[in-house]
Picture 1 (cartoon, rainbow, N blue to C red):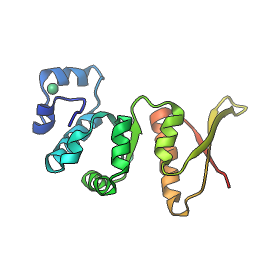
Picture 2 (picture 1 turned 135 degrees about the vertical axis):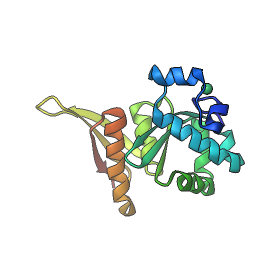
Picture 3 (picture 1 turned 180 degrees about the vertical axis):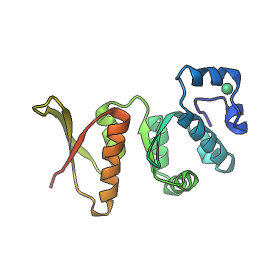
Picture 4 (picture 1 turned 90 degrees about the horizontal axis):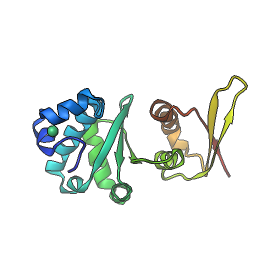
Length: 167
Ligand SMILES: [Zn+2]
């Protein structure tokens, strides 16, 4: 399991001088350390988690947002059982986003399995920028998910999201 901290640190929960310095310099956040430790703990029981690379991570309320390689995200999506184990370990919703994703890709990752048909920006008269995303279909079971996506977009990307549905 690769994480932004050394695997020894992640296993023991104690940071070495190098990782401590990164934390102080703001290259690592306390949330990333907490999540790296949690994932490493899970990887000790679940071999498949061991193959993942956590690039970075953040929290939005009780939800966790993990930034991974695109190939890791495909792997997780093809493995619902493993996804469930990750969510159980985290005790809340876990979102998977490709590291270094563009805003568009970021939205596509959050809305998956719904599709982002279009995305554009517009400005309100007061200069506030809004982002409008057109999603292929409304998921009636997922009203909460939509609200969470708006929170995550705002907190992590400073994007004010308006969601519209096609068809
Ligand atoms: Zn370290």
